[in-house]
Image 1 (cartoon, rainbow, N blue to C red):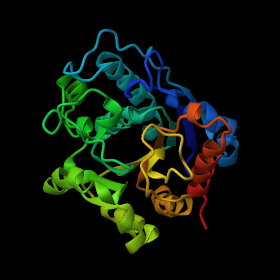
Image 2: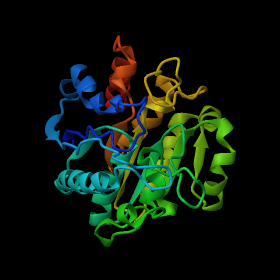
Image 3: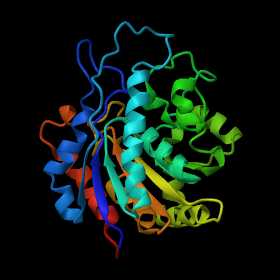
Length: 299
């Protein structure tokens, strides 16, 4: 059994302000899940906190590229240091975000070590980049594009390791079925996209097992799992910045995650986007903690 090590990555640097003069509340995600005793329930080890720089967009304007880019680049390197240390030690890092830009830390860490795959569980593809959009700016909606080498050099080529992920080593799960137009580019790049409808048609467990087997090839040292809470249906997870309808339900998400987390080739998991500011009763946070704990439980 590998040690699960919980690392807090409370960065909100990759999201737009929810309202003028405010900052995204997803930086409280880690604290909220710790309140749900996630460490104790998983019998996990303490991995500490990687403290992010201050959220400050300064005089950034549309067209200036990714805001907070210098801060994100610096933070990505420091988070990668922590993740790399634990992966090399044979631990299983559970990284509590934060927005989706923290996934760059995992991708950079694993790129330093070798070649790894990514199973991204998300309502949207987070593949916005200058080649397909005039509205680049928020790294939390662009991290997959950045990790695969699309976007500005100061984020895509840290340490000269561009790209951190190869297109062929990425799989997307939980994309809403009505985002077909947005996924056309991914289809052209042969990046597999499994929608909510696909998961229900083929079965979460079967799809997850097939994916784990696909990642168990000699060319890869393993794979990472990225979980964005907005993959869940807003009826159970309204506390996200983009609560798109027709998402997965908790039992479906657990069934998808469980075979991956049980695989010896899976090297870590990050959890992102849940915003406690949008969850005054804490019910969505409790549900998210239950999902993560249940996903680690083996029948």
